[in-house]
Length: 398
Image 1 (cartoon, one colour):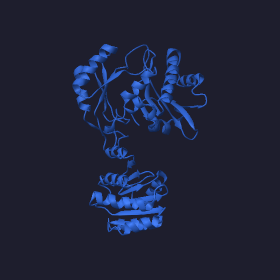
Image 2 (image 1 turned 30 degrees about the horizontal axis):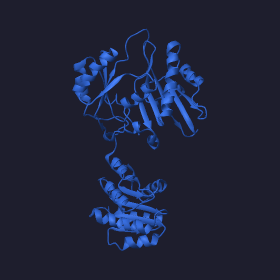
Image 3 (image 1 turned 90 degrees about the vertical axis):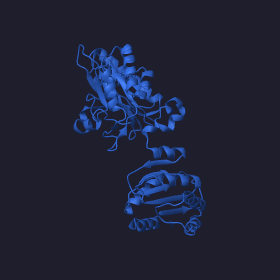
Image 4 (image 1 turned 180 degrees about the vertical axis):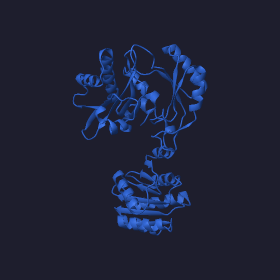
């Protein structure tokens, strides 16, 4: 589960990580109000207005602006709120901005020049442990740094049996070229950040940039946090941070029926029981000349209700020209699934696209017979090859 920058910074602050202070607002008037509050709290006279969406690259897309007074805060907030912000992570359709974070200006003059760093914690699946990644090239896309200056990326793997050790935090601070107070601050920053990452069952913490201020403070100017959905039952307070406005409406609807749905860009809708079979089914669709329009796993207990919900969600995608249902009857009998498909079809009424149903496993032949005798615009298959051939025939008429 992704969360907003202001929510991520709230988590970091709980663990003693120094952050760029800010307050969220959802209207220009509220933005001015919180800017005044921030002035009293921090003494800042300039403010950074930051769009709150679940995507990076907001600055390049016009979603981060500097305001030098309260009227400027109102004007810049008005420009950002409601805009369709397009970044390299949103795709060409962009995301609508519903909130802005009004933050203090931390690039103030002082004894030395401010310096930006990159810092992230994530799971390295190839080594089976967490890794801390750091770089002196803060503020840049890490992919760009990896492509052009890979030697500037520092990696420190953490043994899960003992956790982050003090010498490792110091090693990172040394590698970033820090000394004196800034060195001590970075050691504390890394240690606190790692504790926050572990305690919240996160799958990714990315702080870009981490700023060394002109008076040698180390703080998080931005924060991108991804939480493990499977661990949210342990963190009801974090689960409440979910913002469904940032999610695909069809994926949200599918969640209400315990369906695992991911929208894709193809023309063939698919409904399958089991994630592995779903991946194989998408391969089958491509081999048949189509493109999968979605990933939809109805789980092991497919019935009329879940099938009907799956149909309705798939059909809300205007790009879908046909639907392939691929069910393996292990836990559930194929004849029951076939009956559920027929009942769901009749409950929905007129389904404007052809449907290919491949049933394999317990009572597969009985299931195929139910489909064939239903009189509906449904084509049955038992073998994968049969399903592919049926799909090819359907695509010829699309």
